Length: 488
Image 1 (tube, rainbow, N blue to C red):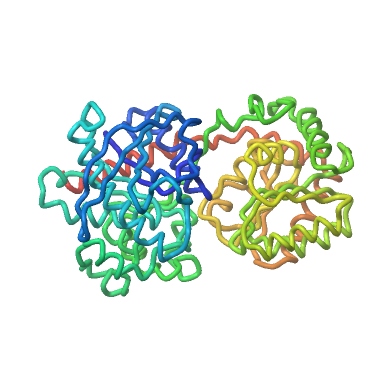
Image 2 (image 1 turned 120 degrees about the horizontal axis):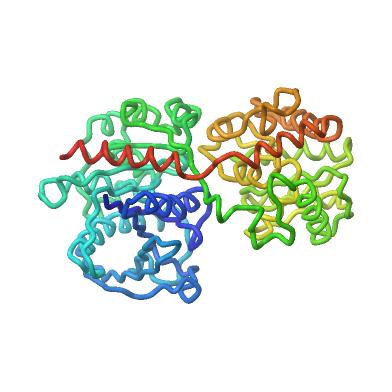
């Protein structure tokens, strides 16, 4: 089976969140099960061509309503996965960033979706050597939401009639709305799917994808239910309820080999679930020294690695942390960037409690890994979280998550039962309130201090959990087969 992924983000080349992590690791896992999975992404100016050994492969012309586009395709192989990069002026021409604004991102991702079809055809004609023609076009989020519609419009051609389409929803908050003028300008036909028309979403790129894809999935079972209701459906819940027979929740996985405290090159001291107490103690001392905090192995360390946005619940966490710092002998290290107001508030909080708290505004992957390894508790109070990988990484490195019960957080973090630690891999709360964050942090810290054996038992169990792609890839393959069977 041949599967062509189309995505705006692919780790490690360009990513802003979980979308990049998934498309950066799922194709590799699929290839290990015999699926010829390949990836197409834009060639942003921020991508280091030399570092990733990206080479020019071929070019072709692509006719549009207004003129003809010259499309240049570059390629590398990363972790055994062929990655294609699309370059075409003016949309993706070497100097651009991952995301800009609505007025520019909308037309360029419409173009990218059109180019997905063109590239698939070129690969099928052997433009990159041996012919590769997809059995499945796998689109991701609004950036490629137009792909299932364009495929549907092409089914009159026998070459496309048997190709299936899958759309994966990573973040419902971003949809590519009000794209009608851009769609007309790009020569995209009118969309007449009845549910799409009834819901008045014919100009919404994500809505178009939901309506026309053979199969739709999101990245955790709980979130697949959540998005069928207004709180998380973001105005598309009506379309999703109609697609319920074809809507699935498949939990994200992660690369267990790349994220392994026993071998992680970002750590000075490696450890396993057998000797994690000493390993985490040494890593804590290293990180305290690096961040200029008092070097104390006994003090509980809370970590955050997050985009600093309301979605991630950072506005709930900051007032809770301020009160916690007054009450408890604790340390804190936060890493992330996002909304300027929240960045300022985090920096101010850490300045006020400089003897126990540090922040780093930005994102440094190696520092993130060291925070997972050094921290005892990992705070992730998201208002909504389709899946999330940070909580899984934290558990993999023996840091117990403090999370809100939503989406993938509810599916991956088992709440502590106040027992001997044989039940639970973290601490959960429900209400979107600073007091809920504060009280759950108190619960976690009290467990750390007064029930250390239970806390360590949970750490050991959390480190032993299997968050690999193995089970999830089987579910994706089954979804691909259902999609193909619909047309063959």
